[in-house]
Image 1 (tube, rainbow, N blue to C red):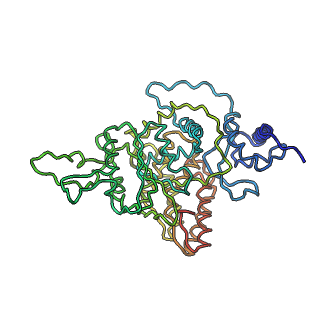
Image 2: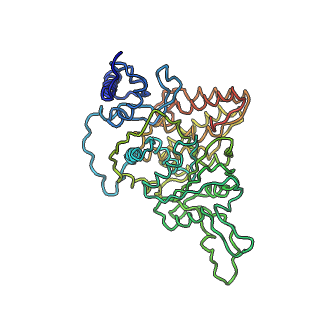
Image 3: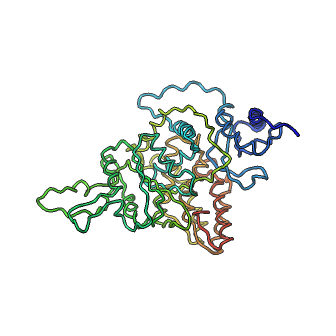
Amino acid sequence: MEPELSRDEVYAAAREAVEKLVAEEGPESQFPFDYIWQFASREIPSLRRPSCSNYLVKLGYLEKTGKQVNASTPERAGNLGPEYRPGRHFLPPAPPVPPPAPGGVEPLAPAFEEMEKALATQGLLIDKADLANFYLALCVSPLVVLSGISGTGKSQMPRRFAQLTDSRFDSVPVKPQWSDNSDLFGYVPSLNPTHFVKGRFTEVVEAAQATPGQLAVVLLDEMNLAAVEHYFSDFLSIMETRRREAGTIITDPLPLELPTAVAGQPDPYAGLRTLGLPANVRVVGTANMDETTHLFSPKVLDRAFSIESVTPDLTQFPSGEAQPFDATTFARLVPRLLDVSNVVSESEAYVTDAELLNEIGALLQEASDVLRPAGISFGYRTRRDVCLYMHFWRRFDLANILSASAAMDLCFLQKILPKVQGAGEGLGEALRKLREWLLTEDGDTSVASSRPWTRSADKVERMLARLEAEGATTYWGT
């Protein structure tokens, strides 16, 4: 019986395997993590392999592309995990980068790379690509929904993001009995009709309006314990009134039920009567999908970015070692997010990204044609959100941590597939055609036409399996 390998011996074998892989397949290759072991000169027990991924990334031997791909080995067949490529260790030395010129724009990618390290130091494993995806969703929509199984860090990501970017953070636990907006927006007591009791959300909006340069993150924890459209429908409607006027981004006033103003007397609620949704407010809702919660209505899905947490890799652990990180890069994020020059409509984005938006429109039309026979459709609002997401992705130059393929894959996963639900063979046939379409390699190197989109295809595969097993299927909880 051979003696057990030491950790240093395992790490050395992992480094050697990656070096051999790069020598044979080149520094541009992309692969799932388990692929490297076929290049190892000695057999490494399967239980010793997962711990090497973080080590190789930290050492610069590997880096993640931002995509999710299927494992390559038979024993892990069907498991979806991060895609990797050779890291900075295999790149030629780069010339020194001069500091940005006065008025120049600093890149955002380093901020997400450093934030990944900062969160790992705090014991939270969130990939830089997932952080970039969350940030892009915040750029597009005032409402972002984080769904998934309990205990995957859904509420921790917005909380830590706010902490690291010096943003305001308020947590509002949702109650199952909420049936209107009075708990969030406020109400007039029946026994005191001249008085208005402010809701928690109204208080946050007032404070945010007074500090326009500071991001305000409002966490609606377990937001689907009550039916979202019952207590939050007014907010969803106000979101749609965002527009640019006089060089700033505004909305219609919030629909607060205030006491009637008395003619000739000072109005204590004059400021609230014109209070809109400030451009620096973002609402992040967390959602668990089980028998105690409500499904989201089409009105919610149309207006929100729905980010489903990745199934956790239980073999990965924080290193336990404090990683140095450059916290100064975090200061770039909020000013870019709140920049009044950011586009708020397709027409604004079309001025600079017409070719990109045309490509996206053509792709979404193809997907719509596949799903329409099953009675599933999506409209201009969905197209707008996908187009704006990809516009910001390009504007912020995030291709190095979130490839074009990964970004479009996430858009499809987060804006199209949540609308898919139902029963019957017609839906099954549409899903099978959609899976084939998602995996089609069209050979086009343009930004939008970057299939295959494996993460979305894997989701469709699971939805098909549920349809065949139960007779009905839905995106949520599948």
